[in-house]
Length: 373
Ligand SMILES: CC1=C(CCC(=O)O)c2cc3nc(cc4[nH]c(cc5[nH]c(cc1n2)c(C)c5CCC(=O)O)c(CCC(=O)O)c4C)C(CCC(=O)O)=C3C
Ligand SMILES: [Fe+2]
Image 1 (cartoon, protein in one colour):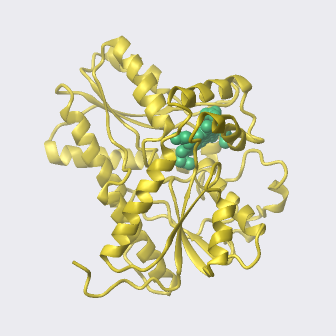
Image 2 (cartoon, protein in one colour):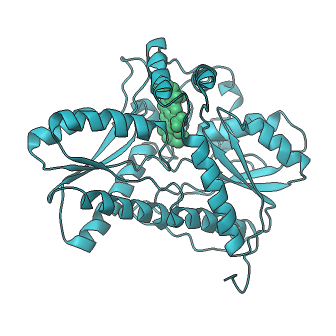
């Protein structure tokens, strides 16, 4: 049933779904990896290894199909409430490329768009890198729309609620007394130290989200379990410290501690992309198998209606905020709702040799100018 009153999209005339992108055939794999790692100092060895992960799945990453599904689900969800905004899709590292999408939006006459990024937490890799790539795309084209990126949504009840359900489902496949292991993408410890406006934002946000899922499950079942936050997908040279422990080492520790099973909950990921289907479903599952440790992997949000509705609500919320209204800002946990506009100097790059000098870092330059992203 259509809503009696459709929400007001003003001042927006479009939505941009901004994602990572992934290869779709074997010939795409190398150029894709070159796009991802340009100037990031990833050893050749590691690149070869990651290339193999993709070849193992026919040279096709699942991420683009997941974004097509999300696009369809969002379109349907907007239509349900009569929210009339076209949704465009562009990626940082593979087709459809962000620059082409921004050009298309410009040609279509879009003046102001709200940006949904498929990454939920603050950090250079998860936030600023997306903003910088969008800035670069915008700089290459004339008369581009203004872009406003949504606040980080990891602590939104829609995102947390989706993981509460999937964790409960994973636990239902395991023996009584099984542990919960939350997993996210490892990043260099230095990148974590500079994440978010006050630093340490990447880890702090994950800790908060994990605690909320645990608390809700405890409220429902009365069962207290062992819980940990661990990391996957480390890359970069070995002498550079990254967040630890690695999920595989952690599974060994759980096995030694005698836990009867483990629910692996990938809270760092919005859909089942390569890190999830390779690093968790293939590699970590193999480790658990060798240890004789029953493991069940919890589903990522994907097109879960809680997640899709959350994204729609955040678009409506941001539009209201930009009209000068004071919308509700649903969130759970201790950290409160995230800021709408990232400060220009939030999550500084570790190394971005060519453009770093152009980015103001002085505290006075902190508030992002309205016309930037
Ligand atoms: C925090 C974070 C997220 C989550 C937030 C978000 O979703 O954005 C994420 C997502 C993703 N990362 C992805 C792929 C890759 N990431 C790499 C490399 C790196 N990731 C990093 C961090 C993150 N990455 C970092 C610090 C590096 C080192 C290089 C650098 O400092 O920039 C490499 C290079 C090879 C390697 O070393 O692994 C690849 C191929 C894909 C696509 C998967 C698919 O195809 O399904 C997705 C969604
Ligand atoms: Fe990555």
